[in-house]
Image (cartoon, rainbow, N blue to C red; front, side, top):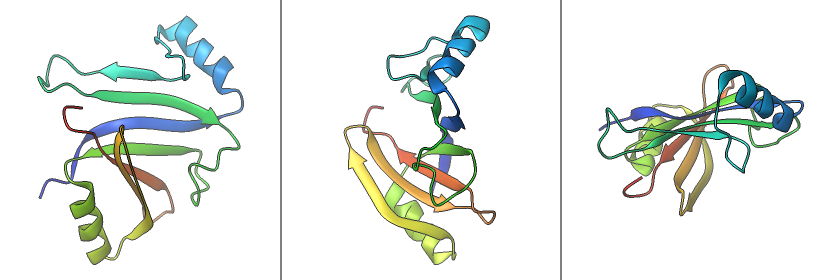
Length: 126
């Protein structure tokens, strides 16, 4: 079974996400989307396409909970439900919640140091 197939996104807390995003736009040339982050689109090495997201979150967000870390990595996966089942069998701290939407399927696991890892199965064609 395939496990991680790439990095889907890097998310981190910021005191002022909008101002920080503007700094990255001005000084590093990132093309910010209306929602405040950047979607790096794959083209050259993956004919099926895909994106990697860079996104600052407000520093008081609860989205990274129960982790206290100021960041969260999102990994692309091929089969979310199969991977979550395997991780549970391996004794990993898999979160009970799974979200499914037009953006794909999302699940979460904590690493041994308590960092929350988001696992994302993109929708078909994404």
